Amino acid sequence: MADQKDFVGRVVGAASQGAVGAVVAASLSAVTEPIVNSILVKRVPLSEAVKELDPDRVKRFLQTTLATNFIKFPFFEATNVIMQGVDLPPTARGAVLGTVFCTTTLPITNYRFRKSMDLPITPSDLYQAYLPTVLRDILYGIVRNKVMTFMVGLNPARANTNLGRFINMFATVIAACVLSAPGNELRGYCLQPANKRQSMVDFFQPSKFVRSTSVGAVIMAISLGVGTLATPQVEKLWATLRNYLKSNPISYLLIVLFAVSKVLDARREKAMLSAIDSAPANKGKSADAKAKP
Image 1 (spheres, one colour):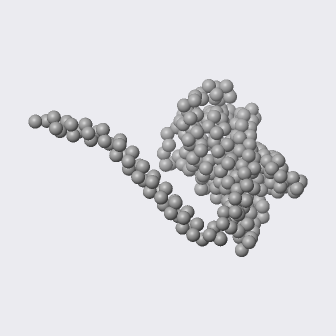
Image 2 (cartoon, helix red, strand yellow; image 1 turned 180 degrees about the vertical axis):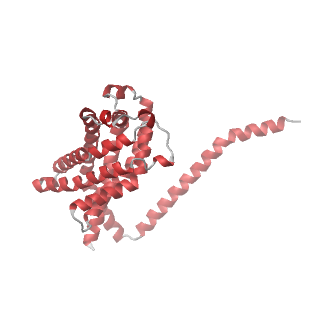
C-alpha cells in the first residue's frame, strides 16, 4: 500500500513538473515557436523569420501555447513515470512511451503548429505527418530514459539536490531533442505547404538543421529543468494533503461541494453575460414594436 501511495505521489510530482515546464515553455514558445516553425518548414533565414513576427500574433499564440502545453507536458511526464513501473527493457519502454504520447497528442501538436503558421485547420490536418512524428517521439522517449539513468548514475547524491535535478534534466532533454531531431526534420519536410514544397536536397541542409533544432532544444531543456525544482515541493504537499484527507474524511465531501459550486457559478455567470449581451437587441426590438401604429 505504501508503495502504491509513493507511486501516486511520483505521478503527481511528475505532472506538476510538466505543469511548471508548460508555463515556462509557453511563455518562451509564444515568441520563438513561430520563428522556429518558419525556419523548420519554410526554410527561411532567421532574420526573415523574426521580421514576420508581430506582437499581436505573439499574444494570440500565447493562449494556444498555454492551453496545449498544460495538456502535453504533464501528460508526458506522468506517463513517463507510469511506464517506469512497467516490466520492459528501457528501449522498449521508451518506444511505447513515445508511441502513446504521439498518438494521443498529435492532434494538439498539429493544431498548435498550424496556429503558429496562421494556416487553416481541418480535421484531416490533425494527424498529418504521423509517421515522422511518432519516430521523433519514440527516439525522444528512448533517449530520455537512457540519458537520465546515466546522469543520475554519475552522481546519485547530487541528483537529490535542486542544482543536480536541474542539470540532469537540462542535459537529458538537450540530448533527447538533438538525437530525435532527424524525426523532427522529416516531420517539417512532410508539413510543407504543397505550393511551396522544397526538394529534399534544398530542405535537408546542416545549417538549417542546426537553426531549427537548437532553439527548440534549449526551450524544452530550460522549461523542464525549472519544472524539476517544483517536483519535491509538490510531492511533499501531496503527502500532507493525502494524510489530512485520510484523517478528515469529511474533507472529500467539502471538496466535491466546492467543485460543484464553482461549476454552478460558472454557468450562472455565462447565463448572465448572455442575457446582458442580448438585452440591447431585445430592447431595440420592443421600442420598434411600440412605435408602430
